[in-house]
Length: 457
Ligand SMILES: CC(C)[C@H](C(=O)O)[C@@H](O)C(=O)O
Ligand code: SF4
Image (tube, rainbow, N blue to C red; front, top):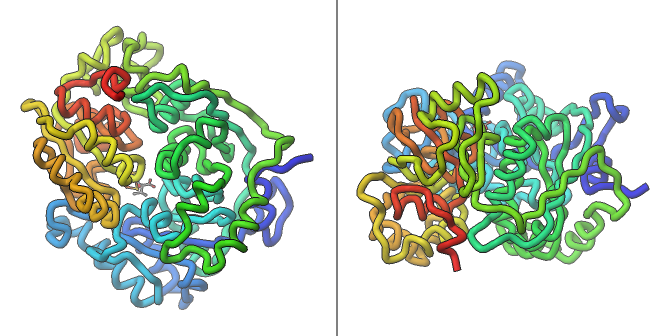
């Protein structure tokens, strides 16, 4: 019987234990950030332990980073977490993209950018969007703080092998429809719980056609589909992305020869298969308070079917039957580990170029990392955004979640390229509408959502 990429990677990493019982997995790479690592370091210290493989561990600061002046951290908890990370990596001998350094960025951007995200690896991080790295053909998943401590001490982790699902994206998308729309459409159709207990392989010609950055957007939101693990088969685009980075393999030819054995076999068996024809998709916009509460731009907000819908409509101050184009937007946020890579900013800048944002709203662009910020500035994208009336910020998680000074004001509707639209996620009473970077850029210009298919040539 054929094997999936997931089977192959799992098998390579099991140290001990029986299938369907907890098995001890070897961890190839461990990313850490300032929010979920302090207690784990403290645990090590109290037990008199060291980090077993500091060379396989890498840190960055992201969640608490102020994006106007990164060194002016007025919130004491934030400052303490950022200072603590700097102290801990120093004490335990870990390499890090420290505050303000050239490699700094959102943790799920730093792994790929430094060449640490590679096919064949098991990658973990104390953060739920770690599956972003799965786009490289890796098993990558988020872990809790006690597991972070376990990985520090042993470079291993106990895990039960999950079931497997294949999500086949077939067809070619219309212009104006992006990978963000693929994943939002999958979640809207099947729900935020559909992936619970599964490792999800995203595959099909529509995935093969995507560039690596667009692929990462899909794997990033596996957790919004309920799955800790989302992954893709590596191909030439993957190898080209990994090559030439700081931590890419010294012998790329040998690495590629191995990576070519990883993709799922044609006769591999899955516990569940979902097929989505992306040629039938339209740009997506969420109307409610979880990522499943999303519709195609041309649809109306659905009828109330349960208490959750009722509560979401009240929180969002919207009504069934309304349209995305009716939403009175006051904010636009282009950022986050879902959609703040260079290609996202380029797509948004192409829309914005030579235009002005609507006078009724505030719009900010927050590059996901310093390398992205610098590359964007080298291309003059910062000027395009600034000329249009956007703010151009320092990299960090920013307005994706209210852990730093960037908040959407209470009651204000925000078009956001991030991944979560929970109550209060972008600030107390903030009303988030998830969408692609192009939909967000168009919304900034028009003051309301418009159909990207009618604008993108
Ligand atoms: C703060 C962190 C633990 C959290 C996560 O795990 O995802 C955050 O990154 C988020 O996106 O909600
Ligand atoms: S950008 Fe948002 S989703 Fe990504 S790690 Fe930061 S807070 Fe989490």
